[in-house]
Amino acid sequence: MRRVYLDSNATTPLLPEVFEAMRPYYFEEFGNASSIHHHGQHARAAVERARESVARLLGCRAAEVVFTSGGTEADNLAIFGLVRVRDHVITSQIEHHAVLNACKRLEQRGFEVTYLCVNEQGLVDPDEVRRAIRPNTKLISIMMANNETGVLQPVEEIGRIASEADIYFHTDAVQAAGKVPIDVKQIGCDLLSISGHKFHGPQGTGAMYVRRGTLIEPLFFGGNHERQRRAGTENLPGIIGLGCAAEIALRGFGDGSVDRIARLRDHLESALLDEIDAAAVNSGQTPRVPNTSNIYFDHIEGEAMVIALDLKGLAVSTGAACSSGAIEPSHVLTAMGLPPERARASIRFSLGKQNSEEDVEFALSVIPSTIIRLRELSPTYTAG
Image (cartoon, rainbow, N blue to C red; front, side, top):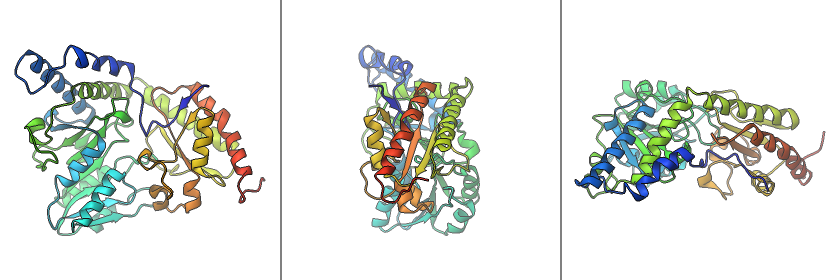
C-alpha cells in the first residue's frame, strides 16, 4: 500500500543530509564536549558550530542559544526559569499544552495567570495584551505560530508592548521555525523556543533563545553546561542534527522549497473545497505558516476520518499530536468560537519538505470518497 504523510506539524522525517551529518558523532566523534582531551575538544567544536547555525536561524548571537531536549523543555524553562512568588503571567487560550499546563501548574502554586481570548480567526488582540498588564506582570508568553491552524500571531506588536512595559516576552516558535523567517531582534522577545523534529531535525532536540542579560533559573542542577542554564551532558549527535536542520531551513527561504510547500498546501485546500460541500478552512482569512491547513468537514467525526484515511494510506491529524485520543474538542478551535461538533469535524493537514505533487494528488483521490462514506453514516447529513 502506498503511504503518504501529511502530519508534519506532529513530527517531520529526518532528512538524509541531517542523518549523514549526525552519523560520525555516534561512532568516530563521540567525545564528551566537556572533556579537555582530543575527543572532547572535537565534540566541543562541533557543538559550537551547531550553536552558530541555530543562532543564524534565529538572528541572534551564538551565546544566546541554549540547547534543550525539545520545545516542551524550552517552554518550561522560559516560564519556570523566570517567574517568582507573586508574579503575574499573561498567555493565551490557544497555546500549546507545554505552555498551558505549565501555567496551570503555576496557578496551583498560587501564581496569577491571565489567559487571553482570541477572535474567530484565532488571533490574539495586542490591545488585550496591553489591558491585561498589571503592576506585578512578569512574563508574557504568546506563541508565534499555532500548531493546529498555523495562524501567525502579531508577535512584533506584542514584543513592543512588553518592551514598553518592561516585561519579559517569550514566544513559542516551535511551529514557526523553518517555515517563516525568524529574527528575535525584530520580534523583540527575550526568550524563544524551537524544536528540531518540527523542521526535519532529530526528535529529542531543541533550543531556546535567551536574550543576553536575561537571568533564568535552571530546571536541572548538575554541571555547568550551557553557561549554567541547562545542566547535563550535551546530546552531541542530536545537537549536530539540529544545527544541520537549521542550515537547511535557512536555505529553504531562498531556494524555493518553502514556496513549493505553500503552493502544494494551497492546491490541496482549493481542490478539496471545490469538490466537497459544507467545508471551509479554519483561520483561512489570516496569515498562516505555509505548510498548514485546518479544514472542517461538517457531519463527520474527525477521529473517524483520521482512522479511515489511515486505512487508505494517508496520515493526517485532528490537531495536536500531544492530545491524540482526547475526547474533548480542540481547545484551539473552541477558543475561536467553533461549536464543539464543528471542532470535532476539523482535520489538520501539514506538509513537509518530503511531500510532492504526487502526494497531494493521492490525498485528493482518497479524501472526497472518505467524506461521502462517513457522511452517509451521519444522522445529521442530508445530501444536497
